[in-house]
Structure formats: C-alpha cells, structure tokens
Image 1: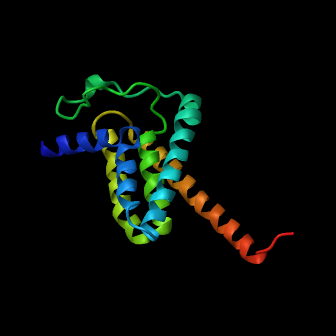
Image 2: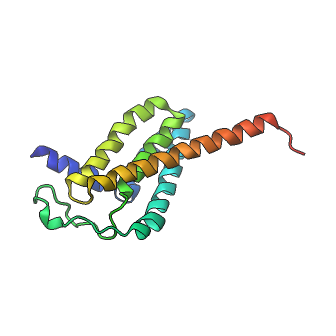
Image 3: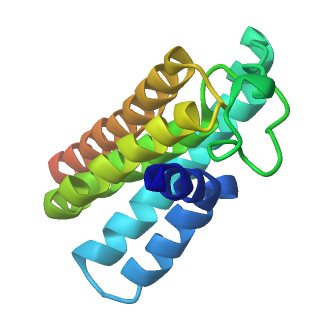
Amino acid sequence: MPADRWLRRLSTATDRGALWLGLAGLLGLRPGRLRRAAVRGVGCQLASSALVNLLLKPVFGRVRPDPAGVAAPRALPRPPRGHSFPSGHAASAAAFAVGAAAESPALGAALVPLALGVGYSRVHVGAHRPSDVIAGLAVGSTLALAARRRRSAVLAGAERNPHPT
C-alpha cells in the first residue's frame, strides 16, 4: 500500500524532533509572526519532549507493542525501544503545532493536521497504541496552551505595572 511508505517516512522524519526543527529553521528565516511562531513552537516542543521522556514514560513504564505483529511494509527499519506511554512523537508534534498556532493561527491550521498525521503514523508503524498517541497529543497541546496562558498573564502584568519599583 503506498500509504505505508509515506506514513513510515513521516514517523521517522519526526525522530528527535527533526521535522519540527527543520520547519522552525525555515519559518525563522521570515521576520515577525512566523519567526515568533517558530521560536514558540520549538520551545513548546522541547519542553514537552523533556516532560514526556524524562518524567512521564519512566513513571508509567508501558511496554511497546510487539513489532512482530506489524506487516513488513509498515514496520520501522529499527523498532523503537524504551517505554511507550505517552507518545513522545505525538507530544512534540502537538506542542509544536499548538505553540506555533498561538503566534500564527493560519500556520497552526496547516500544522495541526500534520501533527495528527504524525500521531496516526506512530500507530500505523506499530510503535504505539492509540491510547499512547492520544495521551501524547493531550500532553503536548496542554503544555503549549499553558505556555500561552502564562505568557499572556506575564504581558498583562507588565502592562498594568510598566515601571516596577
């Protein structure tokens, strides 16, 4: 099936955040809103990756699905190791997309379907269960939204008191 190859490529393109960092590099070439979106997206992506991989995966300790159950055209060249829950790929994808959307809603509208595609690709290639991906998407989105609220609160405080004593 042709989709197998593309989903496998999408899944591996996001290893170590490569796709998101590459997009941020391209967006960073444009001053203004797109550059701010890139910076915010990468910041949220890095924070969600740290949260998922350093804290949540060790706490939950869920074993990955058996790679033997994945058909060869769908399988990753090297099955991932480590814990499965929540999906770090899905968390990073959601964090980048939602974080960038805070600065550029139009960009977010383009990135959110890509982030959902990354999540689906992780199930398709057998690296995660659907619940791993749903939890990862929730963690990444929540972190990016919390960062947005935090920034808004800080800016509102600065406007109320522009010259602190």
